[in-house]
Image (cartoon, rainbow, N blue to C red):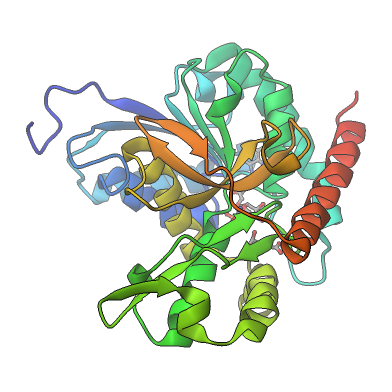
Length: 338
Ligand SMILES: NC(=O)c1ccc[n+]([C@@H]2O[C@H](COP(=O)([O-])OP(=O)(O)OC[C@H]3O[C@@H](n4cnc5c(N)ncnc54)[C@H](O)[C@@H]3O)[C@@H](O)[C@H]2O)c1
Ligand SMILES: O=C(O)CC[C@H](O)C(=O)O
């Protein structure tokens, strides 16, 4: 295979919110081959709202100025119909971020309306095989509304981003043990991408002194893993907003790339990652809710890791985050009912 992508058709990738800060960190990684491979040409549709078309022009100029060989076209757009046409991958970043002092609920009613309209557009214009990743918050519930409005797209094509939380969990364990994050695996984020999420290290392993062992044994600090670790990861997004006065962008873009790369190429043997998926009822979670699970991926097929044991403590946390998702779903259905 040629390193310039000869022999493979280009894929068409849509990024919404393309004039925003996450997209600015994301685009180089997508266009340079870091996500879909060094032999995969890409055509990129950049969707934002009309007032941002000028900024989008600047982004297009910068992509051009990077002189990236895999980029076969970059199109700035403000019309959903055009933007969704024939896309293979759609990354939904476009939504208002929370600023300091705002509550998540302040975002919900404005943002879910965007996802109703865009769901209708993917139903009409996207390929039925399109792989969908929702990033804009509230990510799980926006993904739920998107899927509701695109009934002919297979349910397994809808995902939302909890990989940032997954990476945060790995980062916390690695820094506590003073080891490289690549030596930590199989953490889990259950539930909502919010402060009710359950970051679970019960099955996580670490490699220390060339020996693989449970994170609990390596850390020898159950209290930290059950309390501080959970709360730091749950509140990390808010901590970044408080410090930066802006929501996370570089780490969110990196997590989007990890999510899409693993979906495209598969996960490593004996490893899992976290993704928000339309629940099939696994682990007693309400069918149809968009809930984050541990998943393995082979040949583009995402499978939920089954039969992990739950105890009273973990069950309670899994149910709490489910309860919040049910409430968000009901609020979102109300907000999009007309
Ligand atoms: N799931 C996650 O892990 C995660 C992590 C970080 C941020 N986020 C969320 O991602 C979203 C984007 O964050 P950001 O920092 O890039 O925000 P930003 O404000 O910098 O960019 C958002 C962009 O979306 C655009 N937009 C608004 N409505 C649109 C529409 N209808 N169609 C297309 N584009 C539209 C805006 O004009 C803006 O350019 C926020 O909702 C944020 O909370 C999610
Ligand atoms: O609004 C928030 O609390 C979180 C913003 C973003 O999703 C993140 O996790 O960094």
